[in-house]
Length: 442
Image (cartoon, rainbow, N blue to C red):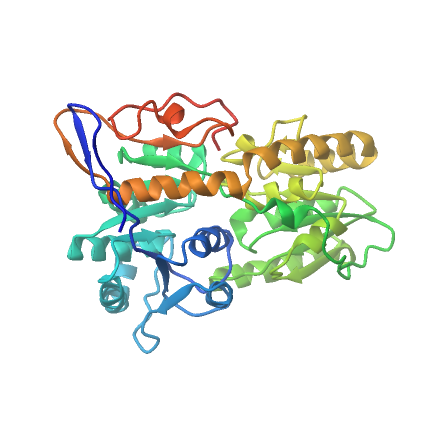
């Protein structure tokens, strides 16, 4: 392995840099936003990394199709049933399954230098294995650690695990801030947003037109997992206030029985409000681009703070006007009135007014979409973000430092064209990075 040796300062001595063998850990075989994000990294690092999944599924298939080595937990072992809202007794019942996963991961992890937990549940298991095997481990924070998303016990466990990690990668300033508010104090914290392959949105491939029965009406698209905090109910309520508009929901209730029940509630709600003929459920789509191209605008209606909002960037890259709720990362992506429209969460009347405004002024909507596309193309290019992301991972894994006094090392995403040295004011020297501009470090 290639190594470098050097002295950074009297306070920090940096010894040995190498390309670590990485074992990525994820809880699910389904394809959610966190999994799509991890896929980009795992595919790029497939020559020195593998992915450990708690279960099989489409995510496993996607990784294997792209040459990534995938390890699965023992399918015959007990599977723990723990959710973000679980309390103490749920962990007692889940203990045999958790111990089984810890054993499976420990056996798989022995040949790797670094463990990389991609979800909250994966982090719980990874922390135990990292401490047991004395291996460095990183945590990719895709969630808002707050009362709206996690029980008190889970918040405490998650923050404790993140504080013990070698480093934390947050997908937005909002998730990083929520972590700190909850007691997070890991000083090796990077804020690196999801990256996107811009060539997928260039329109060079074959045109696929999904079957959307709009009957000449304008079409609003909502994309993402069917779950209550994503706010699909709010769009259906707004639809009752906006005639001659069809809403298409692209996504599925992927993870819990509560999500499946919620989808049934949406169907009942649409009937009760008299808009069932203007509501369509397209289900999960691995490729959402044809649907993005087919709609007139995109609504993002989360009623709790959104950790990132992957589809917001995808919609803007596809050249579509976007309405999103304030709170969390959407306000980092969208400049209200310039690159999109921000509305209050869980306010159907405000959402309906925004829909009417954009549909009534297509020139304004088109101008917003064009500005949004230009900006996100610069900020969220995978080719730009991936090297920064990998640099942080490798540095976290490979530095063997002796600290003589207080200090911290961290990395924040910044404007394209700024060097790593400029961003960190001396990487590895125990210095804080230069402040990033609001709305740019996402």
